[in-house]
Amino acid sequence: MGRVGRRNLRRKALLLFVFCAAVVLWAAPLQPTGNHVGVQMAPEELGRYWEHRIPRLMQALDIPGAAVAVVVEGRPVWTGYFGWADQEARRPMAEDTLFQVGSIAKYVTGWGIADLQDAEKLKLDGALTEYLTSWWPPTDAETVGSLTIRQLLSHTAGTGLGPINQRYRPDDPDIPELRAALTDHFQWTGAAGTHFSYSNTGFNILEVLVEDVSGLEFSAYMDQHVLQPLGMADASFGLQPDRVERLATGYDARQRPVAAYVYPESASGGLFASLKDIAAFVAAGAVVSTGATPNASVQRLYQPQTAIPGVYGQVFSHYGLGHFLEYLGGEQLAVSHGGQGYGWMNHFHLIPETGHGIVILTNSQRSWPFFAQLLTDWSRWLGYDSIGMGVILQATAAVWVLIGLLLYLLLWRTETLIRGLVTGRRRLSWSITHRRWPGWVQLGSAALLLAGLAWANSQPYLLLTAILPKASSWLGAALLFAALLLVVESVAPQVHTASVSQQRVSTSSGAELF
Image (tube, rainbow, N blue to C red):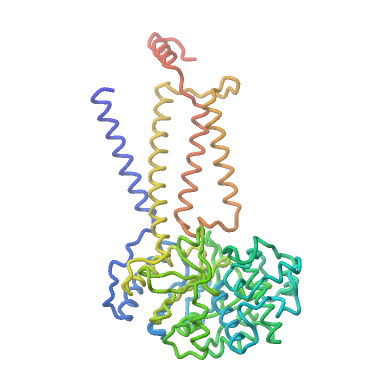
């Protein structure tokens, strides 16, 4: 290659790099994190900063509505309501807006179990066989006899995740009864007490246990012994039809509205509450709190029970009794839990020893990056360099870099393909019998990519889409582009140099190309 050729090659590489970088910077909802947050900021200053920052984040991530609260020394000190409770009806987020808070219910259920323990009606290490009277897992007695309440609370009982798509209208007369639903979907994932395996089923068994031990319906017991004593006036397990109009409309990962729904079970994810309710609950969990539930019982729930492997382990080091644990700055215990359902995502974090907490409720399934941004702000405000959820921001940046590199490669190959067709170095050929093995590899790779994209598009929920909602769309588009490019390259293979030279001679002498 001559000097002019190398110069043109460098120019093309630079132009493509600049173009791809510009596309990524335009498309990526990357926002600076914590640049204006410091430990000297008063809570109201942090609130004013978020009043400007949160709407920008929501717009960048296509989140319709959010409600955020900050807790300091066991007291809610700031709340903010942003966007729409119902985007189509233009109903704004407000203090009386209800949310389906999902698995935050597990943390609340843990308090109900602690209350029964304080009343000496059960023991955490007591076997289920001592307490269950109205239902029995559909398995052998020896296996069930080894299960304990502590194992159910810590996701180490070996019970399966349970169904996540079994949703019903609040007024549906065909909602299955709790025990029948448990029987239909019960599964084992391994021996009890051996490993962490996130399980809705385990907490729904605890729902039966609370009813059998207390003699009350689960929702009634929790209302009398946890929700009302803590001042959670709008919170309830289950959603009455006359309260549906106060519920924010959910929106899925594709920003489609989701109507109100309930599950047959409540303990694992059936709590409905306002921001004020969840902020009061988080505040009561502080060691410095003077809440109605005894602090000694709550603190027992904070003890690490099992290390967390896999994806969850990238964010949280341990699971306690009803919540995730991590150590900020390597030493300061923080407890937290998310609450994700179809059309909903919520999260809280609490440092029990200092009473500092944050609650983030949204009516969107695109909110994990939003949580990561606000939690990183919050942790830096408290003087910590990082927080577990911040790994989402790192992953987001890495995926956008990958998208930029993939786009660069695809544009380079597209330009090369077009130039090859123009100069005759590539020639369209629909012949199957004469296709060489590289063409078949390209076609096979394209077929696998297209099949994978079709499968991903058909799924109601994908972890990648939830964590990286905007980046995953761009990554899918880039992979579709790659599949189509492979198809075109396979039917327009390169021709041998001798054939190209012969073609040029024929062309120059006036001969036909074909």
